[in-house]
Image (cartoon, rainbow, N blue to C red; front, side):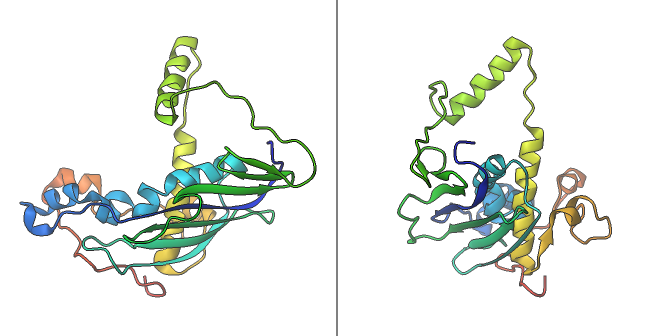
Length: 242
């Protein structure tokens, strides 16, 4: 790429708390979970999976593959409902000396940073970039942003790409990228919940690992079978014990 081989970087999504609904305003546990889905790990995966996943997807795209392992920490102090953390801070090891620092936070009254609360920064052998829209060379050489057709933003571009793939008969399949970005976020969340080093292969290959094929509760099948029980509010994972 324009900045050479990626050596490291930071990705973050730091903002305020999202909306929530209190339990007394719903009829059943299922109704409470669905209407309060951003507050429960079993419904959203925690905000690292529901929101910060987009920044992790960018990191995977820049580097070209998902990380080998993750080690992080997190906590909860301000949320009103659900069982998620307020913040996560994780070191993602992509191998070959490349590390990405990931952090996300949903706490009212906090700052997002000098360049905004939703950003990516990468350092390469030839230069650095802030999310691809600003390049700075490490040496006295010209680095230019590659030319891309003008469009109305990412939400328009995704439809343009889909329609072009149909019209040209060139299938567009983002399933692998989506799955790997999601699992990257899940790997980070498990590490912050447990305080342990979580390896990609333990989630994808090692069938003896407790993280292999891990499923949050309640599942979609649980909703199909009948009434579900919502996890208690404000009972969260304790690193070192979870």
